[in-house]
Length: 491
Image (cartoon, rainbow, N blue to C red; front, top):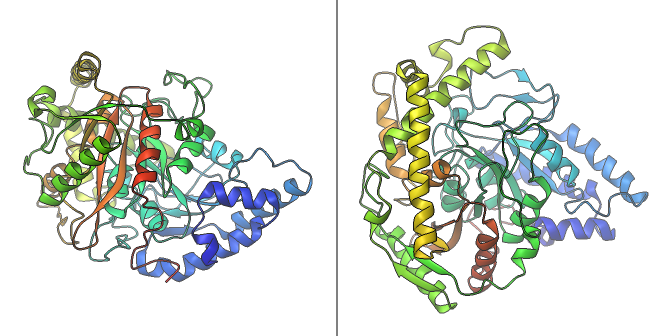
């Protein structure tokens, strides 16, 4: 088991295809890890052992008939975040008391592609209600703890997935990102987290576009190549999609093996005007960026500190609030339609209900004008890349290190207190959800308390390739995959 824990998903898939490990052995090992570690973390909130056993048997049969040699993750255990992505016949809650008890009627397109790649989905992970907060706290299932320090948040909303991967339960797990929900927990848990370009992965069949393209699907991984291989397996337009990301030049896994060349990287250690309510960045996060900038320079890249006003937009918070309140209204209206009943205030967490009610004051014209203004801002960012010749923007992933539990309390009488904390936590990650650009959090730095502090790279629209090439170079120069937190399956 110790040997298998050290392997990434690609390596485990290779061992299965060679017959050195069976899908059932991998599954039983993962179940053992969940039972051992999950009580300390509360990362996995629904166990799918029966379904996973059937899947393991299916892959074993296909292997015996030489029908599984092209499945890169043949029989590799995987966890599904309990938000947006659905698995037929399995409970689905989106972290909400209102939805709890619903059974999914089909596999969403992303899950179909995950399964086709060979992944064996063994459980579902915790997330904040409707992904509304950058933490993994929800009233329905309780908080997920950070394996690096159980007094700290693992980030979110994909915090359950991040904690499970960091603790060694699985080599990678599903996440989605509407404001940083893959990259934030990647930073908090010492993982690699990539948000792909808008519409790189499908949302079908229920959705074609979520909140003007704000939300992207992908995963949290220990290694860069796992992220690339998974994106190869799941990306591409679905039939009937309203639009899709620019076609990739070659498989992303091939990009990981290519020379990064000499990139031009602009970096910031403070947020431009409008990106967040609190401009002051914690020294640990500044140190992480400066360290990454020096490392990139040592690797032969051109690295320049830029002035924040080049990328300022005073209305970012206004833009995001309009879109997010509209999305929260969409979530609740969608579920009222699916459940065939009205949802009450007592079924929704305080801040999300506040967002829902705020949406009543937003007209269709308000929403469309906001999208237009966001698109203008996106052009500004695109021109910064194009006109200045910048391949990448380097910033902190978060304004502060992972925060202690209790920082995020909110009540019906004071629901926006939590919003103020949340918006000051992640001013850097929300931007790429608005612009649609790909971005990644890379675990290059740990502070004096042995807590991971991620750094954030954003690329040009459609250009995951450059991110993967640089990430692989950074991974080789400063390996992180073998770093283990105090709460880990191998302990």
